[in-house]
Length: 475
Image (cartoon, rainbow, N blue to C red; front, side, top):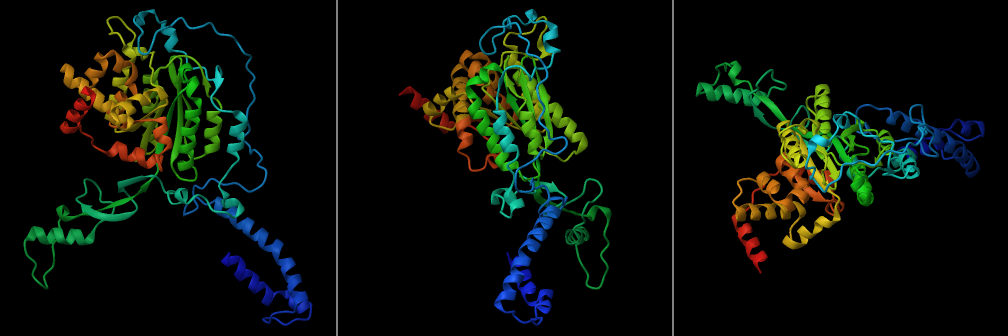
């Protein structure tokens, strides 16, 4: 507004039209000449602002970098953005002969080995999203291009969501002795280390600095997240499509317009497939979401393994990425990993494979949270009067104490009720994360801030809490 006002006043006083119409330069012209100058000024400043916005949208660095914007008006697809049309004929498929409740495949040897070779068929089943709705949302951009402002919570996070204490930018808050080549030498700390080593300082003498005295700065700053959405598109998710859409909408709200990158992995049938590699372009993510169809079985462990594979590939490109896995499912696994199907393998391998996959997440230093869309699980929250994760954790520890089990994993695998309904907690607890119910996620002020904080916290069950819970359940 200041730029518009300044240029308008300058134009009124110094317009060439003043001379042509008999007025003087630098003096406020009469009203008729003022009106003519204003009429000429409006299209000129409109073109100027539009050109400035176009330049800002092409920037690759600075405050405006990474903001996803387009010109105002009716959007038209650019090359590569066209929506494809289905060309494959519909073919009916025989109903699967694999039956059984959650995690209850009694005889893995009856599964054909070719079942695990075939990738999930994303073209079969019921659509997860309304394609027309996705097309509309794909064209809704930040209001920056039309002269408005983007959401303040988004613009303030344009540099990223993760507070890193080992980045190369930001605010220096301490110094340390470098393990390799020093990235940024802290002169003051280096001199103090040399003085401390010599034990005294004589005025007028020179300080001898040795390699062991060198200190480097440690910065604290924002760094982008690499978010992998692991979405369950098996047939059991048919009743929870609304919850899945809401969760993805919250993730979009907090990542669109930032430098956080989001990828999509879908799993069903016998495996998992990467629908979209991590990107900041939500138009690409919309095209990936449009491909999702609900059908088939639930290979939970395969979804986690595929996400680990994606993170490893991304780390080959940039070793400093901050990965966050967000798994959305009803957590009713009924298909084991392919390598688990063999002679002598124990029953309930789908849940046991979840333990293996979650331990690999922890070993690879990847943050993970799980979101359970099964609304029936809320009875644990009501029974123990705690958030979902804390309620399941308390129930597990109470049973572990009662039956004399030695670990959380042993307790869940040994208790049939827990094995069938505690998969989300099992994955999160082993991987060092936290599990949430879908309705808990929708009540959060900032989903990503909550997820990051939960993966950094160290939780322990207080003995007094266990005792109080035992007394409460005994009543």
